Image (tube, rainbow, N blue to C red; front, side):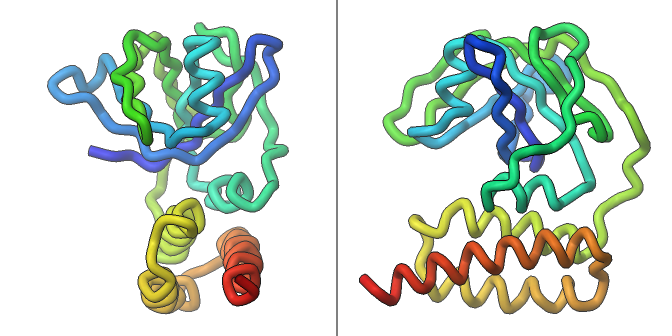
Amino acid sequence: MILETIVITWDLQGIPHIAPMGIHTAAPDAGRSLVILPFRPSRTLDNLLSAGQAVVNATDDVRIFAGCLTGRRDWPLVPSQRVSGYRLRDALATTEVELERTEEDPVRPRLHCRIVHSASHAPFRGFNRAQHAVIEAAILVSRLERLPWEKIQAELSYLQSGLDKTAGPRERQAWDWLMEKIAQFESKREIS
């Protein structure tokens, strides 16, 4: 299973990096380990390989997903409990992990991590369709260079319906950030 989360890593100087990422639960060890698969190159990969720790954050604030992909990475953090880094202050739940082993891959190495601490901080009430639309659009934005333009346009058109019907101010703001990023990509694409 893949869970859409916010992963916080840090470099050897302790400077945090916040990134949205799908985390793979590692069956049959679900509950004790998980797998993080960052693309090369990435700061998440570099930080996790050097510091050996990360915090996986569950949140229903989709602005964080959209914000990280559009240059807005300044979200409130607090110290983590067992690893030497940080978690989102307003996370619903957090999972602190330590890197156990790496399966090398030229595109997307598999970082197997052992869970050292999990905590719930607030209840999860579920995602509405607009929150789902923003997360799916954020995934598309993270793959603008990899996906066919027609696929991106078709999926965004479909997602727009759910957004229009159920969005609140946070979801609309996050969607607007993502649409600005896509418009910038499209204008560069048309020039080349």
